Each structure stands twice: as structure tokens, then as C-alpha cells.
Amino acid sequence: MPAQNMEELVSLCKRRGFIFQGSEIYGGLQGFYDYGPLGVELKNNIKAAWWRSNVYERDDMEGLDSSIIMHRMVLRHSGHEATFSDPMVDNRKTKKRYRLDHLVKEQKAAVQAAVAEAMGESLENFPALVAALVKRPADASAALISAGVRDSHSGETGDWTEPKPFNMMFKTTIGPTADEDSFGYLRPETAQGIFTNFKNVVDSTSRRLPFGIAQIGKAFRNEITPRNFIFRVRELEQMEIEFFCTPGTDEDWHAHWLEKRLSWWEAQGVPRSKIEILDVPKEDLAHYSKRTYDLMYDYPTLGHEEIEGIANRSDYDLGSHTKAQGELGLVASVEENLDSVAKLTIPHPETNKPVVPFVIEPSAGVDRALLAVMSEAFTKETLENGSERIVLKLKPHLAPIKVAVIPLARNREEITSLARQIKADLQRLGLGRVLYEDSGNIGKAYRRHDEVGTPFCVTVDFDTVGLGGEGKVSDPALLGTVTVRDRDTLAQERVRVDELSAWIRTRLA
Ligand code: ATP
Image (cartoon, rainbow, N blue to C red; front, side, top):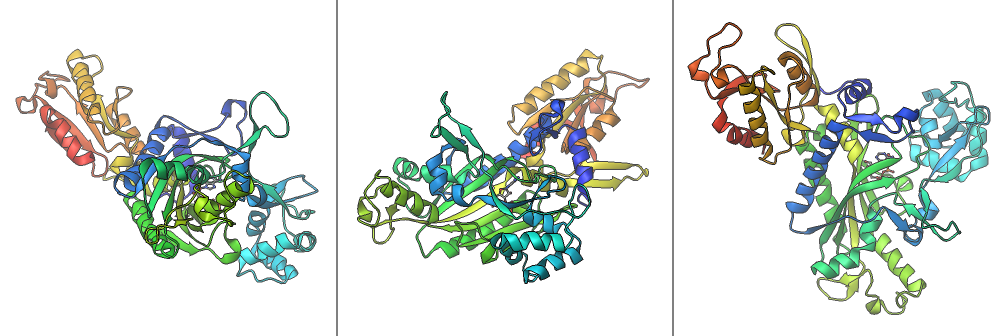
């Protein structure tokens, strides 16, 4: 059974070195987390699985790694400067600031209903209620106060200001000067780097429609209320595809990607039955979106929340950057002569005329993926002897450590040197991290590796090297064999050392 609540996951993540609070020794920085020795492996494995499936296993994709800091014009013409904001309200009593929709959602049902009633809206259509609160700020302030909306920190009713938009982009100065013009933005999504490189990729690869560009990288959002562990952070990582297609074929490609992405999640151990597909209501769509499916995974404690958005961005971004190039005099105006705008167009596959393609964008968060993968893998089991174990039943390709090699005696050179040799041989298979593990007794080592999801523990013992030990004579039949313990079944099998690499490879590759 998957994790029942977020606390058990948070506790495991900290205890075993998956995730730490950012800047912890100075009291922590809200909305920033650091990935520890196991977290970095799990994260890399998730990203590798995504890349393999979306780039290597397809014939219509290219990869990209664009820079994080972007020219402010990019984010102006993408629409982010004007619209990438969340509505916030302040409580004059406590001076605390909240994201409006989160604040209302957290209230008791009766209070939410009172807000809706005061605004003349229905609670059933929550996005429409939020839209009304944003559109009529004076009414909103009065509604929040009269409905008795409480401050999540103090628990008291608040004295609420009018909602205002808060732009979530981080600005940073560039170079030694600090004048008005020398700033850029930390990208709020990796997507814009793909759009600005669209022509470079087309020209250097000779791609024709339809094709896509994939990118994995950091994005930054100055969230008003970061929370729920790594679910909502200010520095996040995204795995994004911009899939370019001929206008008119976009809806079919949208359906294609929805299906592909659901099966990818399934292959990572996140079943379809735990993901609801939300066809995002019009009033809740991002500024660039024609239609969006949000994949809502059923997180422990949080319930259904977005793990991935699959948006039909139409020709919004390439169109808007192309238009801006015209307006800025970088190329001829688009309206005047589309043919001469070599910038962000591509030949139409049938007419050969330049066309601004439509874009389907599957965009998944790495941090949210890691949380979902871990919560599905998290299992508490009662063993036959009545003891309880926590085991992370990760898909083997995601496991941070693939194999732990354990010498049964730390002070017997014959055993330790063979164990080190086995570790080196298995490491060379290139399947991921193999650990030489001599830090404690074998029972503790097994428990630790269950908790971090290591699929196999290999033990080198006295019999392996033909040594008698612990009052026993060695068994000649076991000479040259090791014990391999399976994480999920707990079965222990003797495997010949010279066959071990092949044995492991067939089970992990
Ligand atoms: P939300 O509604 O939860 O704020 P969003 O709709 O703004 O998310 P998108 O802009 O669609 O999110 O971003 C694509 C993906 O990036 C999301 O599905 C999510 O997995 C991830 N993501 C977005 N914001 C954050 C964040 N603050 N922390 C962690 N992951 C995030």
C-alpha cells in the first residue's frame, strides 16, 4: 500500500538522505530544498527515464539545454511580464500574505460558501469564483471579511486587503552595472528557451513538421506560499516538450501526448488509476493556452494535485515572438510579408509556405514526479516473524542504489577484497550506483537498503571464499557463490560469482 501521509515520506526523505531543507544551517530558506546523496540519484534516474522515453525512443524529437537567465524581452513577449502572476491578499492584522485561491480553499466549507454568496458566484465553479474575486477587488476584500475568512497562521478572522496580482518571476541584475536596463529574468518555465531556439534547431537539424524539442532544467517561481514539502517550491525542475505540428493537427497531437504521458507515468510506478485528468476550465487556462489537460495525481495528505500539465499552446509563443521581431525591426513586419520572416516559421508540409506551427506542451515537474514515485513505492509490511519493515518498492530503473555488496566479515581480507572486486565489476555494467556496504551488521544493512529501495543485496560470506567461520566448516558446494537477496520477495538465492554480472544485468537492465 502506498504512503498514507506526507509526514512518513518527509521523515524517510530526511532520515535516509534524499532531501534536506535548503540553507538549513542558517535556519532554512522557504521554498528551497537540496537533494542529498540518494535524492540526487533518484532524481537523475527519473530524468534519464523521461529523456530515454521522449527523446531516444522516438524519431521525431531533439534535445536542448538552454540558459536559465533570459533576456527580459523574451519574457515580455511571451506574456509572462504582464500575466505570470498569482493573486495575493494581505491580512492587515498579522501582516501575513496569502495566495488568494489557496486561502479561500483552506477555509471551512461554510466560510467558502459565504465568500461565494457575497460575490454572487457558485462555489461549484471555483475558478470562476477566483476570477470574480480578482476582477472586483473591493468586493473581494469586503467578501473575505464578511465571510469570516481566517488567517492560516493565527487561526483568527482576518482584516483582508484587496487582492492584487503578484508577478512570480525572479529578476536579477546582469553585469557590473545596476541601471534600469541591465536586468534579466530567471526563467519561470524551460519552454521559452525552446521557443527562442526553435529556428536554430530547425536549421541545424533540417527537421520538418511534426517534431518536438525536449528540455530538462531548472525554473524559478517566486511562489507566494511555497509549501507541502517539495510539491510547491520556488526553485523547481521541469521536464518539458514543445511538440511542433501543423495547425489543424494540434488536437490529434494533444490526444497523442495525453496517452503517451499517462503510459510513461505508469512505467514509473504511478498508475493511471491514481491520476485524474482535468480538462482545465476556460477561465482557469494560462494566458497561452487553447486547451490544457492537467494530470492530477492523488498525493498522500494533499489529495489530487497537478503533477503535469499538457497544454495546447497553439501558435501563441512562436507567433508572439515572431511579431515582436517584426515590431522591434529585427525582421520585416509579419503582417507585411510573412515569407520574409525567416525567424520562427517553418515550411508547411503540404504548401511549403512558411507557417507558425502549433505547439503541444507536456510539462512535468521533476520534484512532483519524485514525490509521486516515492509515495507509490513506499510500503509498510508486516513480516512472518511479526516485525514491520518499510520498503521502497521503486521500479529498479529508478532505484538510487542498484546493488549493495556486503562483506560478511569486515576483518577478513579474502572476503573484503572479493566484495570490492564484485562491486567494481557490477559498477562497470553502467546500470547506476553500486555500493560497497560494510557499515553495520547485515540485518541493519538489509533494513536500510529496503528503506531506500535497493533491489538487490549481494553478500560475500565465509563459504564464498572457502573459509570456515563462526564455528562452521565451509560448504564446498557454496565456494565461489554469493547470496543475493531480493528486496521485494526477500528470497535469497546463491549465485555464482562468475555469473553474477549477467544475473544482475538481466534483472536490472
Ligand atoms: P500549479 O497550478 O500547481 O501552481 P502550474 O499550473 O502553475 O502549477 P505549470 O505552469 O503547468 O504549473 O508547470 C508545469 C509543471 O511544473 C507542473 O505540472 C508541476 O509539475 C511543475 N511545477 C509548477 N510549479 C511548481 C512549483 N512551484 N513547485 C514544484 N513544481 C512545480
